[in-house]
Image (cartoon, protein in one colour):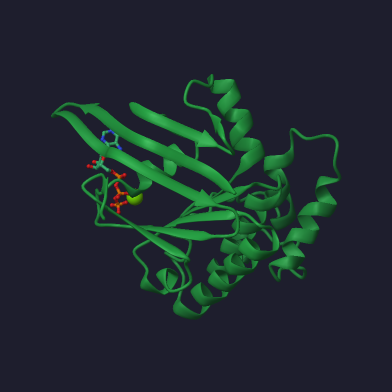
Length: 221
Ligand SMILES: Nc1ncnc2c1ncn2[C@@H]1O[C@H](COP(=O)(O)OP(=O)(O)OP(=O)(O)O)[C@@H](O)[C@H]1O
Ligand SMILES: [Mg+2]
């Protein structure tokens, strides 16, 4: 089942030097249970594409569908609700709050949700990524790989259909990167989510089901 579909998406930015076309007529989809990696040179539009998929940015032209629903004309409130319920983000620099423990960081995206026991779910997710013995540690008491695993656990707290990751192994040594990739692979299979990752890292490409290459804002054939 297709979770996200971009159809003929063009994104233009206006700046001092004129108009920049960051994405040009991009078609893209990601299905449940697969990991898709987006590669391409610096400036080719990878982050822009991830932002459009994650509903953090809207296309200038073209459509975005989430689980079969066209969200292109959604209001900001509706987009926020879709983001919360469908999408999990793993940012390159983790975006963990330094004053909060690992458990509190994982709970954070679910604060609006009063109907579930968030603490239990956060603890369960941290155990699953191998951090059951680091629940009360703050980010500065964790290694880079452990922080990345907290970020992955946090991305899962709202049971997303798709996880978006910008350079998930970017700041990690090779062994730690390997562990993170094994976790993402397990996640894809066990939770039946789609994973879309942006990377420069060949190690990550080896773990993916499909590679999409961007060149100058276009998907290269
Ligand atoms: N907010 C913005 N305003 C103006 N131009 C932008 C904006 N965001 C991105 N761009 C331009 O759009 C193009 C694509 O940028 P993008 O960040 O998507 O590239 P990227 O493939 O992620 O590059 P990198 O590998 O260096 O992260 C670049 O030419 C960039 O300068
Ligand atoms: Mg980028």
